[in-house]
Length: 398
Ligand SMILES: *Cc1c(COP(=O)(O)O)cnc(C)c1O
Ligand SMILES: [Zn+2]
Image (cartoon, rainbow, N blue to C red; front, side, top):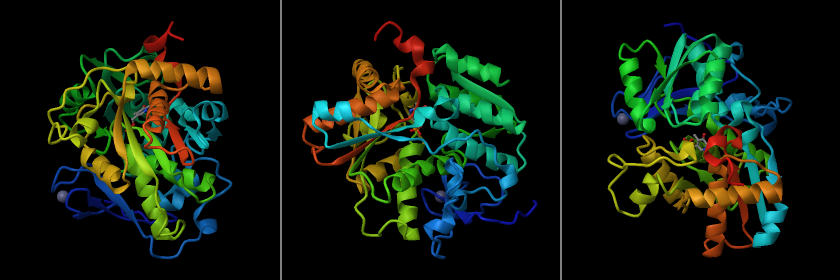
């Protein structure tokens, strides 16, 4: 095992999300050996770090927060310019529905068309740093495309396993990046079973959501950006389309880290976090409502928001923790509602978002109507992807 020297990164160790047992951060890790649960990266946050010293401001990508990311040697960075996406006001929709302050962070502007670019840029960079030569992933679409792109850029072998019903654009883009693509009848959990067969010998790194520690670290940069872009104030409510949950968990992790760093006041009231799910596949909603003990036996159906078709997320306990700590909730949105949201965001604001992003807007509307969201509150929607790859799901329905 070669020992790598930390340069700017403050990475210290990893810990098991279930029992907090520590794990070394400087060798290749997957899930925890103790509990088979996600490993979470810990940084040195007590040692003072000013914003000026901690943020590489000229860097217009998520890598401006490199000090709080796990990559040790910049030479291993595998980047396509991911992150630092715009916060856009939605003035026409705000006026129509009575919101005082309504903004959308547009992650559809990322390389490969979704926020999966953040997580996979980070994971593939770390994989490269740790000597990995090939990666495999079960995916609902966007994560596979992103992995294929970053693997191509890193000179690594890429194997992508996705549901057969995934829109063609996702498959096609993977082919053009030179990935090996396997199609499976079923949802992402069925793809995960195929990944286990294909990688029985373990020669590829499985970069499934939360089965290695670093996609989460890429996703957390959304939290840093939101704080910086809002001039170190946070919204009152943040709505996020939750599948595997890395974004939800990562953004919350970022808020906590910034409080420890003193970049945000320790007493600051953090946003209420809303996990928006597809009515066709909403394990969090069911667990929170007490209709099941957990998602382990949940059966989901396909949805036009492919990224939300995750029936049994490994990160369920972590997501539930974020929802209760933040006094948030989980909300199901139907495919019909998503189409309505797509029309509104397109026709009123000029945004062609992923159905996942449309779901988030419809959730905001619903929560406003029921009074859970008050007119004076600052509301931030996360649109996680571009609509362009989803054409087959929505063609002719504008
Ligand atoms: C993957 C995906 C999601 C869900 O993200 P998680 O981090 O798995 O919760 C939401 N929207 C889009 C467009 C996605 O690709
Ligand atoms: Zn453990």
